[in-house]
Image 1: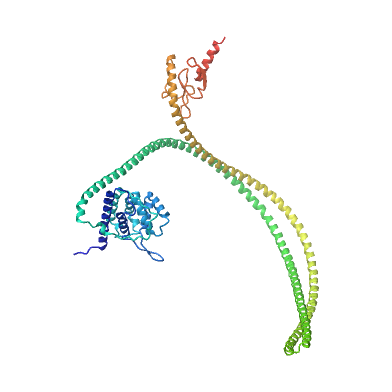
Image 2: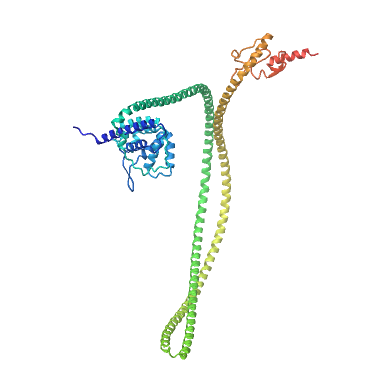
Length: 606
């Protein structure tokens, strides 16, 4: 005997349990005849069985604290696949009492049953098996045919009306255990329930057919609306295509004309640029020959200036070094003075301490005379004080010796400063003499530079003239470039005007269609009047050109009937109005009829 796959056995058992729970729920609900509450036992068992079916084959996901294995992950996918399920997901997340994903999944199943769309939602999941493979193993019930069978069985639950309170229930801590005693049948119940089974099957078939009919009607109505919209859009597109083709032909003709004009302008500009280039090259060559001699003169003067400026910089550097030395000496003197002042302050403090010690000794001596009992202790204190005074006197002697050494060092530094100042003054005098001599040389060089500047000014004037000529040529080139830009801008404006023209033509067509209906009625009345007068009223289709100016009619150049002769004219040739015998009010008349009627009126006048 071949061993069966345990996962296949599990799927078959879960399928059988789902069949029994769904069938028992439908039968009991039909016999119950009311809306089901959350306390109804078959309904509770149905949710437990569904939970086991959805948990079968779930992949275990590791987290930091524990392993996670819940059905809330795949149920969240329904929102992406089925837009109507977004309301259920939002309402489940807003529930305050739910803390675990398993509780959210149980609330989702109850809300889906109340909406009667559990089968539709789970069908979307089963179809998308690529997405389900992230949550389920390949042998899971939802990945195999048993899942599709269970989804088909869930369609029958749409017969049931359920009213479940999800807020009050503790869905997180419920224990999902299947009660098999509900599905065990007695022999006495079998005969009594056969009729109920037949009635339930008939009702299931009826409800299933009604739902299929409702879905088919909705799809047919949506298809009819789509067909109508597509036909309308097709007719609009055909009309727009014909108009666009005509516009393209006109634009191509205008494009050819603009290209020919652009080529002529480019030829003229290139010829002008070649002539200007030749002139500029000749002028540059003459300028280079005249510039070489001036450059040599300028380079020699520049070398002399560099040498003299270097000498002056050396002298200034020596002065700066001497000044810095002087500042350093002054800083050293100030530091020595600060040290002397600090030492004097320490001496004054030590003298004060000595005076205090003497006062203390006097007081102690007086106390010794007054108290004979504390002579021994006070003698010890006096001995200590004497030791301190001896130390202080030794420190005073050391400080006096340091003072004497500092005073000697100060005297030596003052003598050295005097000698250094004398040397600095002598060097300063010699440097001043050198500076005076170099200033005289600078005056001579400045006169030479003035002469060179005059030469440079004359050369600069010549250069400016040449630059003016170049700038004039550049302005001409910029004008040509600006003309090109204006030409491109005019092309853009032309395209925009064409768009506006097409839009206005469309508006005129719509106005013409609206006005044609009203004019037809008026023209019918006028034609009846003309028939009485014996005139012939031409039709609009027969006239293509104006009778007077012989211009072709178009959407912008409209047709107008003369109310006297009945011919068709343009607006410019029939913009006159006169009262006729047939109509006392002024009516549109062509130019020729207007002239004849005026002549008749003038001849009739006395």
